[in-house]
Image 1: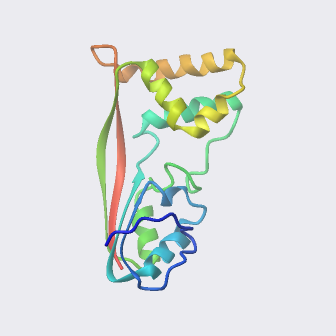
Image 2: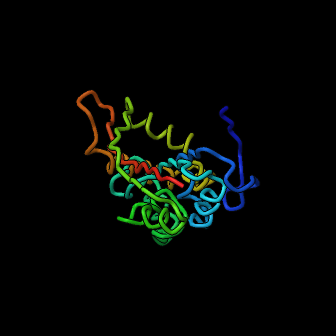
Length: 183
């Protein structure tokens, strides 16, 4: 039987050793205390149970997302995010994810990368997708003067120019980290 449920990852309301497997796609990296969440995951897994997770590689490997965040951060005069703090790229540092898994009590941690390509028929399509899917990006621009929004848009169009395809679309590379470990 497969069960899906929304849980509080840093305190899982399940008995110890009661779960066969856990799958978390792009979640642990956003948690305030990913170590606590991974320890809880380990606690609820049966001996030999499996964890599989995905996270993002570095910001430089994921311009499809980081370019927009960087442009908004500059517009708002915000400092760069803490690379060890919660966020898309929190697990990007070499060895960080493996160390978190080992510290949580997992064995046989395996971390690999998967190269991706985000294809958009136009810059306009990419822009609309960012506004629809990237809530922090959209929220940061909401209510800003139109000149600010256009400044960010122009900066991003220039930043993504290297990914322009012959037909005018965009093909932007990305990199995900995928990990598996055993309880």
